[in-house]
Length: 305
Image 1 (cartoon, helix red, strand yellow):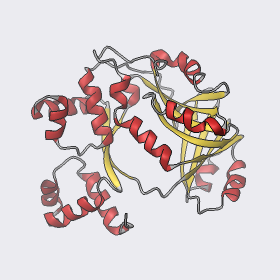
Image 2 (cartoon, rainbow, N blue to C red):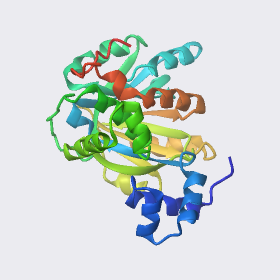
Image 3 (tube, rainbow, N blue to C red):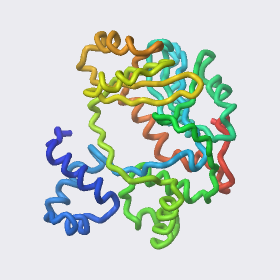
Image 4 (cartoon, rainbow, N blue to C red):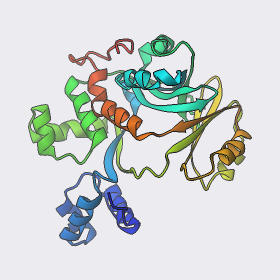
């Protein structure tokens, strides 16, 4: 695949950020851009370097976020990863090495099943640790909902998370519903605060490494110190904080470890491998519809998979 022209890609991102769901003709009219120029950009980059995805408030539908770190021997890594990435409650799995050598996981667990996380992880490894993660700064909000919609809404959420610009006609066909009904369902998800926004996501595989650090105390200096890096911060209630720095394998790994280790007590290196990305993407495509019972009556057990 040829390298993108960054000015073109950035322009398309800006346009789709303002008009995430509108047709190209309507966007062209609104932006005062020639339709065929916009279509050329869209055909060149959309689905290859970026997609528009629905951002969901998972707390509204009763899901808690966790991170977990599993010890897995090298000879079992792919076998365990294959099993892990068939579980819809596991968001992402990547090989990781440091205070645990094996796998780094993000997990989404129904509020009513939060006490089962350890039992679920024990199916994959005898040696693991896990932490609940909240947004930084932490509000302390414990108001978790539950799944209260029909099964069709789970299918719709999967479609909108994977590609929110999927044509209404295609969504109607997949759900077996009329176009006005689909539009109503999307509007309902927005009005009830389940879908927060639709946003373009760029995927250029610029970052293929991550440094994850756990610390009991967060010095605000860290965010200022690493403002030139892509870094995320999360709160681990009852423990402290999680920090993740993203970088390229072209950068010096040793220096990164030495630099970041000054700010955390636990540290590991995470590898974003293409094979794992393929497994994670496969798991992502129909995650919600495999989480939810087909009668719409809540979530399946996280221990079923």
